[in-house]
Length: 138
Image 1: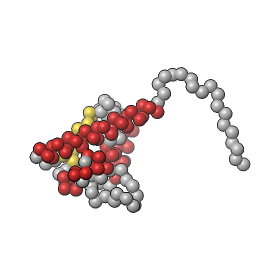
Image 2 (image 1 turned 180 degrees about the vertical axis):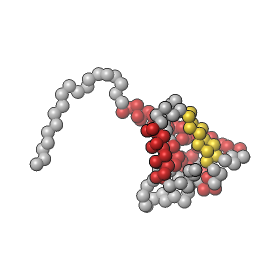
Image 3 (image 1 turned 30 degrees about the vertical axis):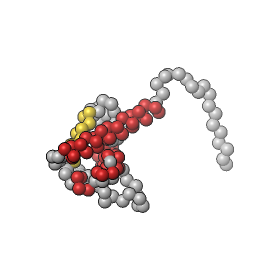
Image 4 (image 1 turned 120 degrees about the vertical axis):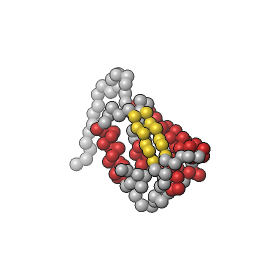
């Protein structure tokens, strides 16, 4: 079982498997244990929770790691049904914060999909008829 305190490298490995070995994946439900309510910087907004869900992570200095939520957001796609559930979201404030975080993660997923589409050329037109590359070294 993975949790938000699991090493970032383990999250990356799991998400790499899901992204590359399961390209037909259409649904993802992420369930997070209740300890995130105490450890995440909720007062700083959804973006900060997304980047640093465990406020004890080193932010500056040391090696920069993606948070587990950043790894989950790599499961991008408009056809992907994503839902986020945090245990013990039993007050209106917690449900609101959970909804804001889910909305933010979905937004990042959609941005990633749009960026991937921008890199593809779908027009079918030949833009470059001839190219020459010279090696000026040695």
